[in-house]
Image (cartoon, rainbow, N blue to C red):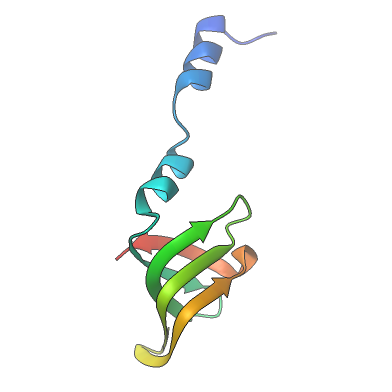
Length: 86
């Protein structure tokens, strides 16, 4: 049982929403929440397929208070709960 060829073509030609979103927020201010409830805010410098993230001019926020500022910070993808545009 194969899928409808028209549906396969439509799926192949439609843009990947996740990739499109991540491309649109690169070099913009973002908030990243981790599974440990820490939040990082900064400029999204790069992101890869594993959701590993590099932020520039970042700030670490714990319990709603700024704890530390970083020129650049690397966040491992498996600790990311969500990424949102600030």
